[in-house]
Image 1 (tube, rainbow, N blue to C red):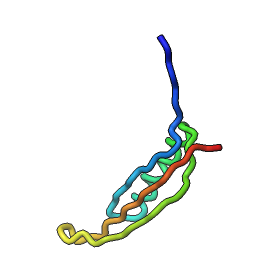
Image 2: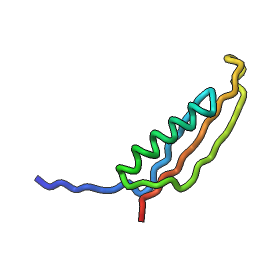
Image 3: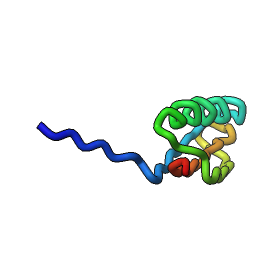
Image 4: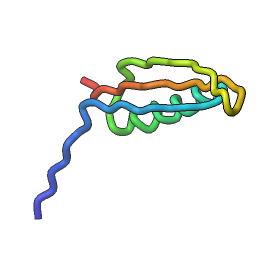
Length: 69
């Protein structure tokens, strides 16, 4: 039986929250989790939109992780 382990080279994760503090907490948790996979943050993109059904701002982020070199 052969085992072949491959490392993630790139990974993009998306996050949403109704307040900025909660969004940052989600991102920080995933940064810690991805460090175990030897991934570092390459870039983060934020966006804010108004959610008309709830009447609140919706914060979202796309975080791009890359393999540590």
